[in-house]
Image (cartoon, rainbow, N blue to C red; front, side, top):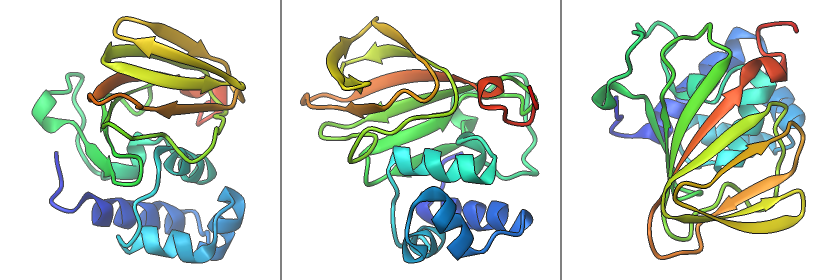
Length: 193
């Protein structure tokens, strides 16, 4: 469900996950490569991190990106209705992130990213510890993948190998929708494979 202030909700969830595994703000900041003040600002709803920053923080907390903005006690169904999708706005990235997952035990994490004109996944390329399948639903988006720039349009798809530096950016004047499905097992999240 959409929150009236998603940054505060994200901050509360981030703090909850961090405290549940006994990490201090300083330790999480060091692990993720951020300053302690940045982590504190995110937890207090004073900073809106980029998509890439959120992915780094989630990886350090050993949670999925969608778990950062979903309450742990929230009941999940096999069907995810459009009105019930957990959503998070990333002001910095000019994006809305929606979780399409229905089962925490799944190996897959499907996300819908709506990237506004001028939006980007971060300042510079970042990599993930998991494989990702990406499908462009609407619009045109620039992808910098392992140092090579490409333009992807509606209907294009790409599979991104783990640890491959990438950066998404919307240089067009129209909104872009991107479906990203991550293989959580590839990141050894909760599976120990």
